[in-house]
Amino acid sequence: MPVIFNVRHLEKHSLHLQGELPVTELDLDGLDECVKGDQPLKYDLEIQLLDGSFLIQGKLEILLECTCVRCLKEFPQRLELGEWACHLARQGEECVAVVNDCVDLTPYIREDILLAFPQHPLCEPGCDKLPRSAFSGQNNPSKGIGSESSTWAELNKLKFN
Picture 1 (cartoon, rainbow, N blue to C red):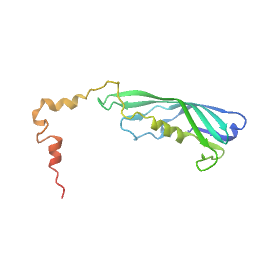
Picture 2: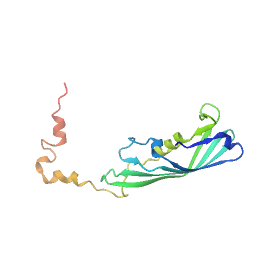
Picture 3: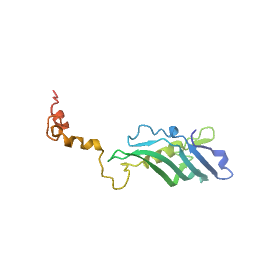
Picture 4: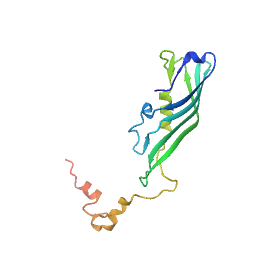
């Protein structure tokens, strides 16, 4: 279920929304091979009506399952936007869509979560390890650099006409 609020509830006082958003609502699958979201997003938001616009402030948190780009080890990483804020206009060119007096915050949350994704996740800050299979060619000189079975040699065999 998306994160929505009713505009009419803001007429008298601000709103407080707290809960979990299923990761399927964020549509994070397949966006990054090294980062996956399996756990729901937790949110704690305060929504205010501010001079003809909406001001949403709060906290977003999701546990991601990452793959280290150096050693390929899987590890969990908590993504937390502790002081998340979103300003949505009610009028004008870039006004927010209000459907049946409700506003859906899910696209704005998704966008900021994606912007905060780790670019090159590392299992630990100084990780410089390679997986064991990367060293398997060192024991077999016939598969070393410059041999017929190396990747470059295979590419050199290609003929483009």
